[in-house]
Amino acid sequence: MRYALFEKYPALFALSTEREGGVSKGNYASLNMCDYTGDEPFLVNANRQIFCEKYRIARERLFMPHQTHGSCVRVLDEPFLQLSPALQRDRLHGVDALITDLNDVCIGISTADCVPLLLFDPVQEVVAAVHAGWRGTLAKIVTSVVETMSIRFGSLPAHLLVQIAPCISVENYEVGRDLYELFRQKGFPVEQLFFEKNDGKFHFDLKAANRFLLIEAGVLPSGIAVSECCTYRDSDRFFSARKLGVASGRMFSCMMLRKER
Image 1 (cartoon, helix red, strand yellow):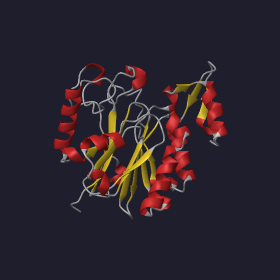
Image 2 (cartoon, rainbow, N blue to C red):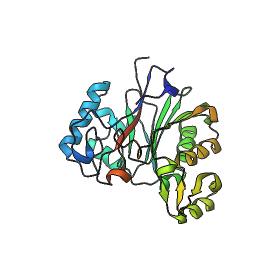
Image 3 (cartoon, rainbow, N blue to C red):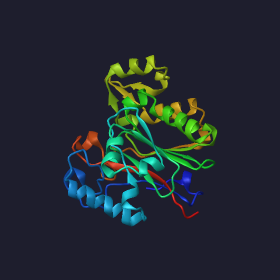
Image 4 (cartoon, rainbow, N blue to C red):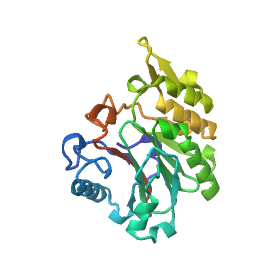
């Protein structure tokens, strides 16, 4: 799916994949591009090739990290592109956010209920893709991304446009009571983010938590768009680890600056 937030920038490629269009089977059906959740490697490679051919992306310039629910941010620059494929894979292991200002380099992250965030600085022409589950949100990974964009590229938070892409909704995201205290200790407005249901169980609003972090970092509310889709509710359209199990496919949310302007 494409996003209206970025439509006025024709040189910007930004989207999140949906389930259809690939060759994977079962809980990976069908356009699963993630290679570390149990899918057959040859099917994942075929899906990546399908994706690249459809959107005119050079296969060797498609990058997605091996995410570990951490807070590591990696900038992809010219020296990174000069590394061997093996070294590139090594540098992308344990990374949950990518940033680049290079043309024709497609960066993206994999999710199946966690929050995908796509950031664009139209002034400095920098893009970022962020994976934020509850652990990454607690570690304020998107805050680190905004800070890195500012330090490395001179991006002003007030110039950023951010799409919070499809993820699990608060209605379907039941969490343990312990998370409330963890987020309270980190300064989150927990009264606005956690909701106790009649059965005594807590639900957590991941989208709102990351929106809070963005605004706290200086991003303007008008520059943040939030998808109303829920990956759990709409699991026929998007992958959902809570609905399908951890051994299932992942959606791919990506950004790329095209050289042809």
